[in-house]
Length: 82
Image (cartoon, rainbow, N blue to C red; front, side, top):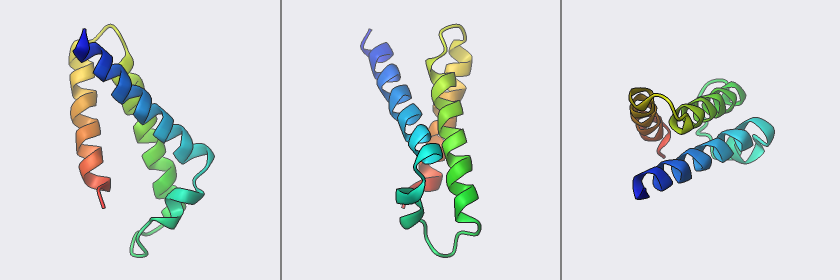
């Protein structure tokens, strides 16, 4: 029960973050390092990755798919960690 609640909390967090990446990218562009090429596209695709990971994490029918989404989101978080 607690595990499911925490999974939903994490999924909703990533869904909201991805939504903001796609609809209001300006704050994310301000924290983007200057050495990153094509910052607008990077923000867009990271938003897509967050939304896809969140929706996969929240789907009810495939525990192996949810586990893969969890690992993918963990790898994503390491990649974007400042």
